[in-house]
Image 1: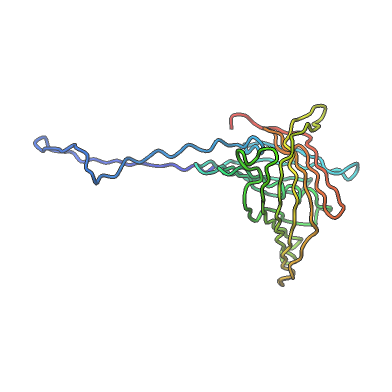
Image 2: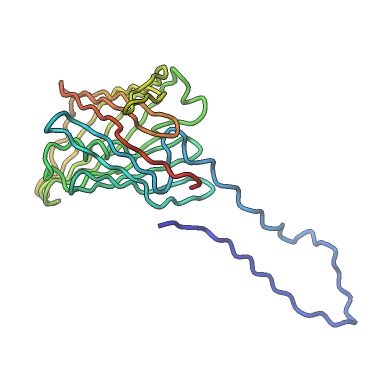
Length: 259
């Protein structure tokens, strides 16, 4: 829900007799007037639009294995430091949750929870996939997002399989991103100009199975190529891990104006 911080200033005064001499000169020990709070940051991000009511629909897979994944932004919380909102992910009857945030350092949207939910081979594979913490923005601000810029990004993804007592895992990923030259990406019968990001990633899984902590294991390295169109978001992505290729394509989107 939308949380709004309100600052209430209550001022009270006592009546002064007519004969009294009132010293109106400012006292040196008087507290300064309360400064107005700074304006909210200029969000949403143009590359990852965090707009209340924004929605996207992606298609992944081919033929009978093709799936449609619907993503939407919920109520946006705006403060002077950051904009935050929940992200809902729907694949058929399954629903996942993620987060979105924009602050002075840049913008983040939980595309990793989105892909984890959408790429699951079977509906019952996981009952809960969501973000469990991160370091740094997915899309940094200013010159840090210029062509040829490189940055590190760390993310923890929480996964509960079936009954949460059966298996709960935390997958900790470190991704080295580089922004490549912008490219035209197909969108229906048109094309969208998009920033091309290439990521090289390593992951480590920490699991608790039937109440017992399993030995942490390193997962196969993986890569992700991500195309973000300004004012649109993710247009296309290709993930590669252990010889498996997963491609996502934007089918439809809506970014409400005036949010």
